[in-house]
Amino acid sequence: MIRVPPHRGGWLEVVCGPMFSGKSEEMIRRMRRAEIAGQRVVIFKPRIDDRFDAEDVVSHAGVRMRAVPVGSVAELSARASGHEVVGIDEVQFFEATVVGAALALADLGARVIAAGLDLDFRRLPFGPMPDLLSHAEFVDKLQAVCHRCGGPATTTQRLVDGRPAPYAGDTIVVGASEHYEARCRDCHEAGIDAVTIAA
View 1: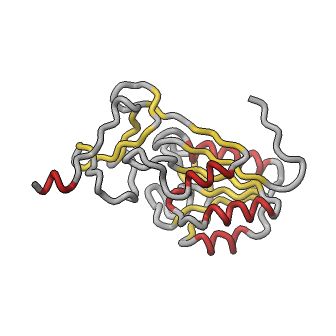
View 2 (view 1 turned 90 degrees about the vertical axis):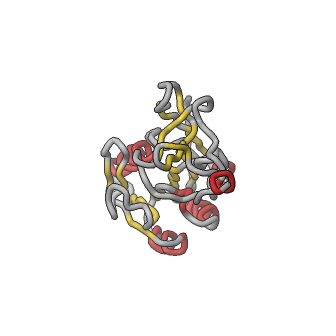
């Protein structure tokens, strides 16, 4: 597919998919190319995501790039000033105002690259992702490899003691392979509701 970025001004790119699909790695690849081109780049990550490193964005494959951990969209917006390319990793963890912030940065001329989960472990749209996807000029939906059958995985399965997490469980639980698997549609299992477990 040939992509033609706007001749003037900024734009929004979204890289999404399940866990282990290479979203962060793809964002880092794009950021490094921009850096090589001499552009001023910055990646932001939510402060709660300290799985591999408190500051760097680190992919599951070990690819890393220096990032700025932030606790809010307001902090992200304030610190993005002066950068031509702005990356936002794990964007699904940010509050809904991240959509307006990303669009405002694009309107000011920045290329904004947002990467994150499009669906939560229940296979429901995750946080601000639906709005980001609908506003983006460019969208890439990546696939992982299903941990069960080896097919193309488009969903994330959260596990508790090796079993699917309860449907009523917390939406945000930061973790990696100890808590999550990539699954295809057929292999994804609905979690047992917490009410059923208590009965």
